[in-house]
Image 1: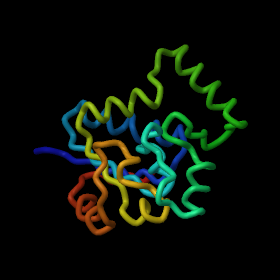
Image 2: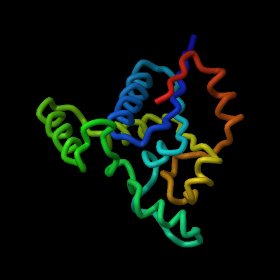
Image 3: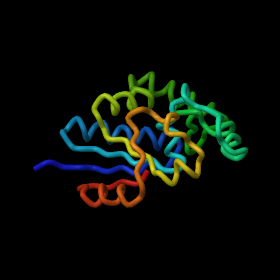
Image 4: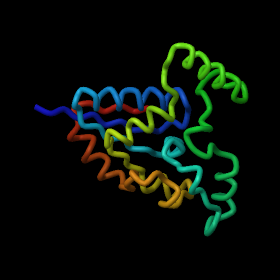
Length: 158
């Protein structure tokens, strides 16, 4: 009997993104099917900083691009961020323990063919263009997400 887990990634914070990606990778390692649905701030995790554009965006969308993280490499911590100092300390502590960084867990998830979905309405509201997202990301609406979640054995909101 195959198992399935569905993670809704709402947070755009480094430590919460780490938790979601650690669970997603671990689930794939034990042959569990994994889908990740990114909405609102969680979209920053699947934004490709090399493909960001300000073309054809409203003034608010341009402003949002300027003041928000450009991708997973710029996500803040949820607590004790201290203008990035807390994140730097956490990453050094992780390195001392031989733990991979967030970007490595993201690359692992992409290699393991974890399904990445982006919320259509969130993409539109946040002013993202399809080409700004990682190529593995498929944009779906809330109803499609719910159908997937209802077929899952485990659903997590992060």
